[in-house]
Image 1 (cartoon, rainbow, N blue to C red):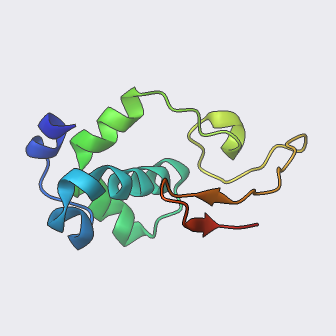
Image 2 (cartoon, rainbow, N blue to C red; image 1 turned 180 degrees about the vertical axis):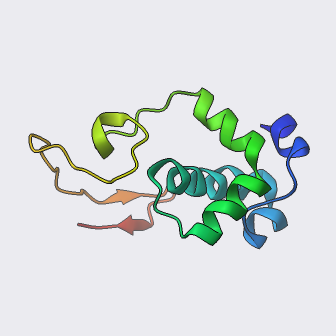
Length: 103
């Protein structure tokens, strides 16, 4: 990751730039998903692929399964398979017991 980041032009957000060890991966993954699913605006799409092409390639190379988005293939349109069974979100907690999210 560090080699890819060093070869890129910069970061996708000020947040990632201010604390790259803690935030660069999560901020980059969010934009990678937006690029893969074509959900970013044209301007943000272009900025992202110009700013972090090596990190995007590294994430592509991991062959992450993006299911349920079009059966895991990097789609151009968001499609939920008809047979997909949505699961109720359950609460989960930070290691110190703070509730983070509830259904």
